[in-house]
Amino acid sequence: MSLAAQIARSLEEGRGGPLAIAASTVWGAMAGRSLVKPLLFPSDKRVIVVGGGTLGGSGKTPLAIECARYLASIGERVALVGHAYGAMPPEPLVVSLRDHVACVGDEALVAARALVGCDVPVVVAPTRQAALDLALTRARVAVVDGVSQTSPVRAHLALLSVDALQPWGSGMCPPHGDLRAPREALVSACDRIVAVGDDATLSYDLSPYDRPIHQVRTVSDGAWLDGVRLGWGEIRRHKVAVWTAIARPGRVMDQLAKVRVVPKLAIHVPDHGIASTSETTRRAQRALEAGVDLWLCTAKCAVHLPPQVDGIPLAVIDYRLRLGDGFRTALRAAVGV
Image (cartoon, rainbow, N blue to C red; front, side, top):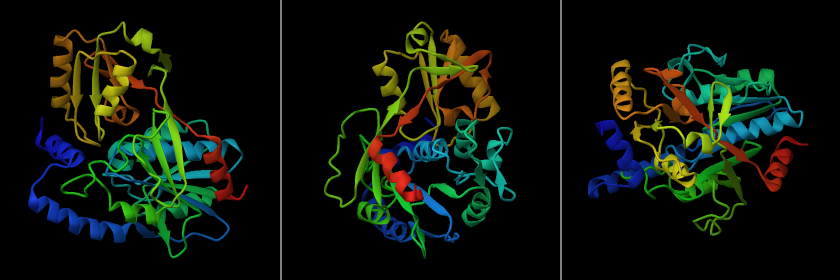
């Protein structure tokens, strides 16, 4: 495992000594104060923000996408503001499917692909304010990915997305863990907590926190290959390798285990990780030697990889969120319908 991957895993698992624990306390104090972002927007517009409980793996971007999709489906003019993590947009722009990941970021590209046909522009910019400004020239409602709360005026709805199985990750802030900020600060910033997961019940009791809690279930019926969805039964007939560039790749492996897909090979690189051409070729050779005939990856991982890796086709795991009636009601109330 590379050094970057080791650091990422240590954050997720909360490994570290006394110095790391002390540094986590300092990080937590600073992060708690920075959760509220100074963002201005006209009084006739509506803003929904979606923050994550952990540094990756909380489901915030899929939740932001699904909020935008739902609001568009009921007739709202909606734009999604991406955060272009690790990218350098030269100016405020609407993301195109042809844009390079280094320009707009992997999560913005994932959002643009997911929202094709929904008439929801995905906007990025050098600053969040510039992105929000452009978004609100095109829409009445902006869904902002990666912001916990706004000031001086609070967002019309602030959602805290957490993983239903591990809502607080390792339970500590960096460098000892992967919690974005102390729990109390995260909850204080939000209006509602949204637990995202494929299980019907939460594994963690969130009731001590004085916020409404919604459960949003994940759904997956297979993987997409060249526009065709392969069911899990068909995928089981292939010799499969898995490639991930996300936080907590174990969740993907657990999902595959539930549908009885046993990969011949699994390659995990750090969250948002981009493999070099030589590295991709080397790993593809390992897959060929193992007899693999199908790669599986998530939508975010797919933006870093070609449609085929040394002749082996790449299938993108189907991953959708199913919003409950109570949550949809909260979204409609936030935008005034």
